[in-house]
Image (cartoon, rainbow, N blue to C red; front, top):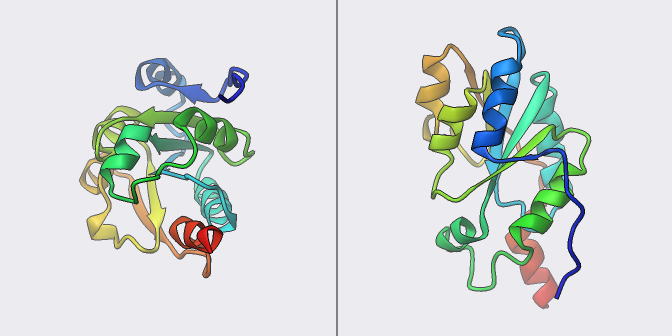
Length: 162
């Protein structure tokens, strides 16, 4: 059994984030990205830092444990519980807000957050990025950033297995 994690001021729900979003000035450039981030590796950190550089703050939508299981990443995934993943991600200077979502896609969360910039890794072509239409309809930008070569959680899990 894992020890209880300290509370984290960067961890929000869609409901607790709503007043934060409402208080941001209209010109505040809010960036959104999402993912599982099961085992944090250099490729994740690189992507998050570059995503954050596109705006004034970064919201990270984190797949819940149940939604990770539904993504068919393997029977043992996620390896780390959502609370642990959220705690580690919130510890990164480039991440301003972490919101765990339980849906299969972050579409409803993107509608709620209303980011000016939506970012995914380069393995996602812009036209396939969930939420693209929402962000573009609000006058925002959708970006697919190149991935740092050689890093993958699935490959890391396979390497650990030997």
